[in-house]
Length: 120
Image (cartoon, rainbow, N blue to C red; front, side, top):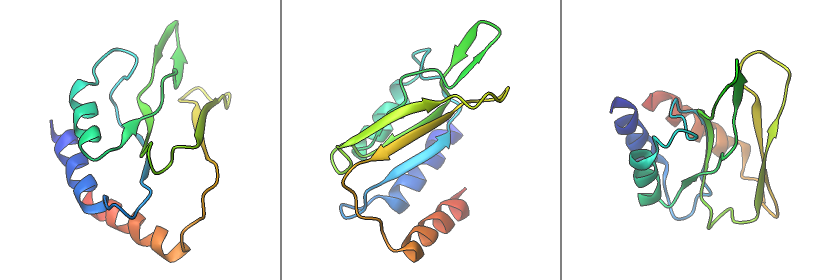
């Protein structure tokens, strides 16, 4: 419950019609086990969606997908996501490639990161 409240607070502070929002985070909700109704509802209210549909960790015959990339499909519609198997015993990485995007000013990105950290 606290996580969803914190996520909503972050989305309220970051979301704008002019920003192409992408959040990469270990959200500790296993998207492979169907525990996604509440977070998906919250995300869709900001027009952003979970994009990871594959295991981010395989360990002792079990799989989970708790790392996720949350993306605005309309503003970042031309994208691809794939796993990056890194060989480490913890979680594998995910790679999102946004095609045909113009990077923002680096200062703007740092301000967004600072706001996100201060919100948590």
